[in-house]
View 1 (spheres, rainbow, N blue to C red):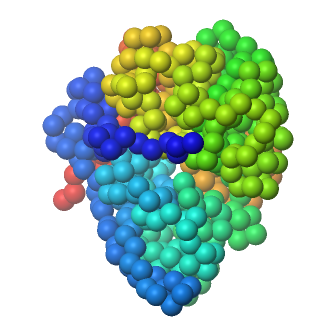
View 2: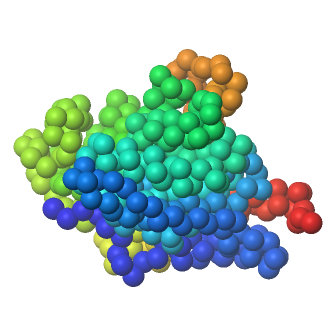
Amino acid sequence: MVAPVAPAEVNPYQVALSQLDAVADRLRISDGIRQILRHPKRELTVNFPVKMDDGSVRVFTGYRVQHNDARGPVKGGLRYHPAVDLDEVRALAMWMTWKCAIVNLPYGGAKGGVAVDPRQLSLHELENLTRRYTSEIGIIIGPEFDVPAPDMGTDARVMAWMMDTYSMNQGHSVPGVVTGKPVSVGGTVGRVEATGRGILYIAQETARYLGLQLEGMTVAIQGFGNVGSAAARLLAQAGAKIVAVSDASAGIYRGSGLDIEEVLRHRTSDGRLVGYTGADHITNGELLELPVTLLVPAALESQITDRNATAVRARVIIEGANGPTTTDADRILNANGVFVVPDVLANAGGVVVSYFEWVQDLQSFFWEEDEVNQRLHRIMTRAFQQVVELKEREGCSMRDAAYMLGVARVVDAIQTRGIFP
């Protein structure tokens, strides 16, 4: 089984720029504003040493990119993955800007990452790396400036180390510097499954819009990490039939539907899908081409390209990952009548509940989980409806409509504030 990996020739930053340019043309954005949007406001690259358990020292490279802060403090996850590079982080930061604007949060976009395979580190080494990286980027993060969150390869424990490190350097506890923390140190209930729950809400709205029934709908999910597994469980609880899931170790398929709770128990004990015996084994590529109603790519970027888009047989794609579909693939899917709900809308549930966590930290007053979920539902469904209305008015794709909505809001903020000095 080969892990999903973005093709080497696909540069995510170029994809992000091409998406921006297409929408900027539609919105008739001036060249000056377009140049502001095309360039991240701030980029920090850090090369830092980490003492390993055997006494040796390794130097790791990390990044933090702040794309645009016209609408407020920048917000974005922290990724630990061997393929992390500056262009990937730039693209992810830009997508975060649009995502926050689409769901109308008072945030700009940022992203961070370290080029490392966290599975190859001991817990002690992972903590050392996180604390040193946090100290290196501490000059540009803070609850009023830049608020990191978990992403691929990071989790609540990593966020707790980041918060503690930043707090020690400040001399007092600063829980609002990161989100996605454990509840015991200022995290919020509902954050762990927030992105997956947002996908459920978007799936419900999409089914209603297209006249489909979510109950009994066949679903394939590429990527069975935090996002994919939560989406699978919640969709199954809502009555959908999950027929295939995959992670970096294996893909599994059962036409009659997988028992997701059983799959989750297997993954909990083993940490991976490999070795699961209750279904047929398939590749990640085969999963993308299954004849299902709903496909949820929730792994890495650039998984659906011009090389495999024509083979996609799903009626609907809801993007759980960031940038899983290239620009060329998007055109093919649209021509083939596939209804694509783009990442900047579909997976925004995570940043929405991160916003809730940040607000609760700043006011030191915490909500019950049903309140978190109700507020998330209201924001996600409203954003979906706004994008659909714009799509119908402009006669364009959901992606173009979402980008038009988000980019226009950022442009409005830039123009309202003016150019300093």
